Length: 182
Image (cartoon, rainbow, N blue to C red; front, side, top):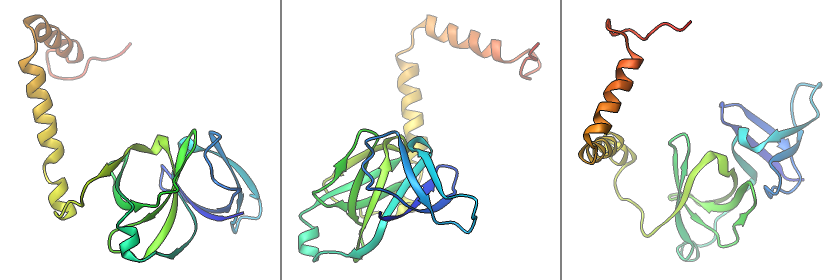
């Protein structure tokens, strides 16, 4: 049984031993490594798991070999983005995937298991973005939101605009406060 470190969506971290992680089931069985003698085993729903680090990191292959692997960006539902090279032998199960990855600047290969419920997507990319993380995130979400709202308003019919105004009036009373509920 490999040793794993399980990160949950709420920030909790659990050390455990598990059978091989394949994500064929919507739950994961684990033997807990805890100081609490009352907990021995658990069944964990994959929907509660953010990611699982499987085993210990290993030395990465030579960089010229790693450069032949796909570059990927893992976009998590919480907004995190992890960039890495992905080894060719990825295991995609019914409820998640298991990837051996090397992150840029790292000399280690790590095995990560990520339930699909934690991901927005895994994107194959042509080249690394050379901007810093702060530059990549700066204003992008606001620009996208402004663009979508502008496009939506430009394509709206007078009936759409009237319906939106009615919904806004239903949500607020005349004083600007939310209406009370019975």
